Length: 111
Image (cartoon, rainbow, N blue to C red):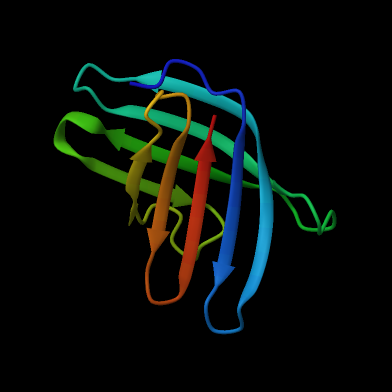
């Protein structure tokens, strides 16, 4: 379980045109459900394109079942969940969540 997040940095790559965007997480909240699911909510702000509107992201983590997903309101269906792979540093102080589908690669770095 994640107890504290000091920062979230996201690298978002669109594969078709190799466009890369960099985001910083803001207004981070962590909640734990009795089922063991952990929900992390935050908004993402583009650090290079300041004209882009921030959007909301939800990470759903169920570590005991090795199930990790994210949702974002920048998609047509903000309720759709996209699978993530989780990598954790040996010290446990950094987590990398990776979404890699046919259209995008997204790296969520949580410290």
